Amino acid sequence: MTPVPSPGLRARLLFAFALLCVVTTAAVTGGLYVQARTDILQRAQDAALQATRAHLETLFPLRTPAPDRTELGRIAATMAERDSYALAVYRGLYAQAGPPSDRAPGLMRNPPPGSGGRDGNGPALTSEDLMPQALSVSLRRKVAEGEMAWQRVVREGRPFLIIGAPLLITEGDRWRVSGIEVYTTRSLLPEQRSIDWLATRAWLSGAAAMAFAVVVALLATRSVLRPVRELGRAARLLGEGELRTRVAVRGSDELADVARTFNDTAAELERHVMQLRAMEADARRFVADVSHELRTPLAALAAVAEVLDDEAAELPEPAGRAAKLVSQETLNLTALVNDLIEISRFDSGVAALSLNEVDVAELVPATLRVRGWSDAVRTELPPSVTARLDPRRVDVILANLVGNALRHGEPPVSVRLSADPQWITVEVRDHGPGLDEAVLPHAFDRFYKASAARARSEGSGLGLAIALENARLHRGDLTVANASGGGALFTLRLPRRAPEQDGAAG
Image (cartoon, rainbow, N blue to C red; front, side, top):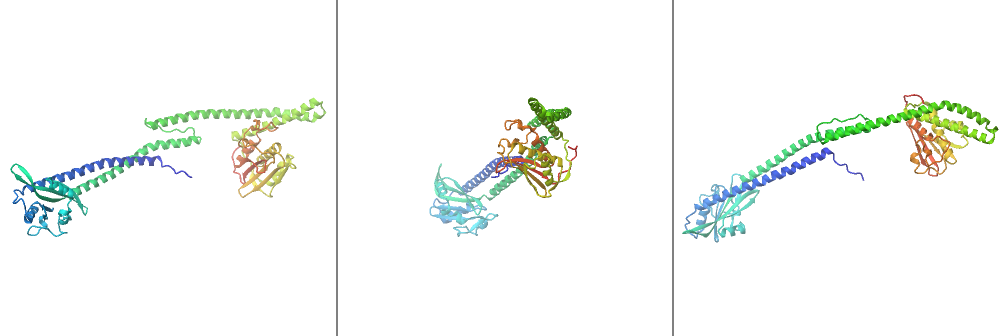
């Protein structure tokens, strides 16, 4: 399952700033909105209660403690304001009065259901909303007990306040409940509009704060991500070998400390790499110099060894055996020196290709024939497989692969050639036990034969390493695996048109 990529640092910072802004704005503006809404409604409610008390005082003295419907209508008309209804209730009787603008010439007594006044901004409460049976039980109970009470209601999205109050009768210094209940209404629409305006301002403030937070987040992420990007770019260049890469140090914060640490690390790494490169160059130069210095005495030893080899059969047994040993070891030492010189050329970068149009189907038999391996190796060679290659280096590759198979594998050894429009492939296989799995990754290591994985042989231990370097010089590849039927299988792949290279001829 492919892992879901995580958001980048910029996105995470923007999200964090935006979330902080949203939470802070919601907490602050929400708290202010709730407090302002409570204060506005409380002031409106207190003002309505005060106005109701003032209107109640105008009703005294009552004409009769047991009013009829006409008297209830007068009380309701007195309590009704410019934009509200009023209801007067006494036992089973009640009377309503609407705003003065909605009244008939006389008092409005028990208006028909559905009629109502207007507050200048749409329909207000209707007479049905102020019927005794429409009022809440709790409101009427409190009024009946002699308390002034109120209730908020919403009709068609418009808020109203219903206030209920009992009419009291004075008896000397005492007050008693007359049993007359008065209910009035007051529109809270102006307050609701103020509250809506506050809510709109809160939303606008939140949006402005969000935009400001995004701008601040962009500026913050830019200032934070710029040195991070510079560090990333410098790290990539350092990984690509640009050891002189450094980053600019700005300020004295944590990012500046990271930049200074990076520069110090890069400087120390450059110093160590320069030391290692100098040591490696010295080692390569030493090997090359020693190899070249050994060629002259080895040439003289080879001439002497050849003479001894010719005379070995006529010498006494100990001397003859010693002469053959000297001759063989001289040849081995000469091969080792030649291989070291070849490796030193690869290491110093002076090895180059000498390209020619070559028929690989003819080059393989020629390589086997020169070394006397034609009878020991089976070949599968399609005719006319041409490619632009360095024939000497391809010959070295084939000789190392076939010689390795003959020395360390078991017969039959086979060479198979195939080609396509871009590549040629040469497979060299033996039918021995193959290579141990632990040996496969190190098959092309230099001098690997000196390990316990393989006994000492007459080879230099550099043949497969040289073969791999020659393949790479052609921009090709050389691999090894164990064949399914047993034995080691070396596969050489070379482009049919190797690229031209500059440099000394190898």
